[in-house]
Image (cartoon, rainbow, N blue to C red; front, side):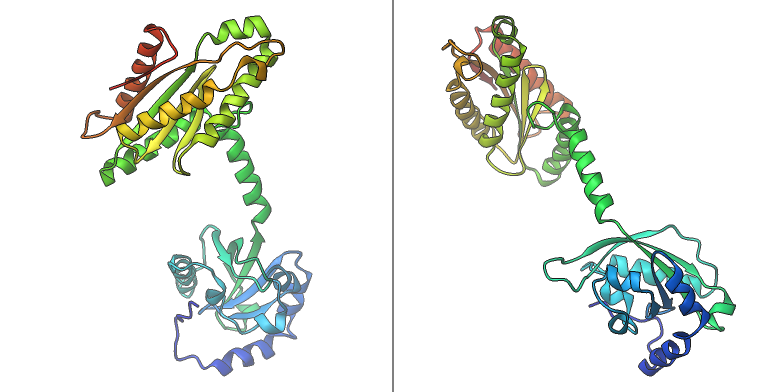
Amino acid sequence: MYTTMLNDNTPSTKTAELFNFYKDSSLARMLNFINEAVMVLSINGTIEMLNSNAASLLDSNRDVLSGENLLSLIYDKSGRSQSQLTHYLHNASTTVINSPPIEVKLTRASVGMKSLPVELSISTLPEELSSSNSLFLCILRDLTIHKAEYTSLKRKAETDFLTGLANRHKFSDYLHEQWMRCEEDKLPLSIVFIDIDHFKLFNDEYGHIAGDKCLKRIGETLSLSLPNRDTLAARYGGEEFALILPNCSAQTAQLLAIRIKRHLSQLSAKHFALMSNARLTVSMGVATQEGQRYDNSDALLNAADTLLYQAKSQGRDQICYL
């Protein structure tokens, strides 16, 4: 628990005395009428009083939380959140707080919920309400629903609706991220491009509904073929797919491409359109950043794309790599 105080000389009995002094005051009555989770903090972070909404938010009661230090309830092993809150309170001793809300995680008493994301807004109480003591009003807002909605929206913004794979926007962001990481750690990075052979003819013969089923089934097959959670499969566009393989050597990437091609070849048109056994084939291009072969991620991407079109120009249904 984070227990650092700004004033170590303050006796613990003073907290109880302050609470007894304020619990029947107009300030305490005011807190109970506020329709938000609210605490009153001392300059060292001690919870001098709180309303029932704040106690309920933390799945506890006021008697238990009164006298606790808010810093000890913050879940952050790095200590950065505690230091930020301490900094705000310390500055408030000489000036009115004029800082934006801060986001922290608070521990809860309920079993199975390790932490609760909240937004803390802190403001200095007027002297007439704090009776010449340095007290601060802390409003807590539950961010659980907000976080869930944000995560859902972010996932939708990064996902191809039809296949469930990453979309091109996510692919570009992730490639940049992994390029930086692999360059820094001197690790290989491979890209695999996959294109369905003669997909336009497939659509023309069997219809777009069958074509969509085909794309979706290929997306599922690619997802199941990924070697680990760091790899990313994306629908790059139309009937073209792409894989990002961090820390994957050229040889390993080539073996993976062969395995994926074999899995995809086991899918036939009868999976997507009735009364047909037409075989599904793909062309693939594999490029790997090793030994500083490429100057940047765009060059690596262009190399994989060039190899894909080489495979297509050489008759399709094959893999090309350097």
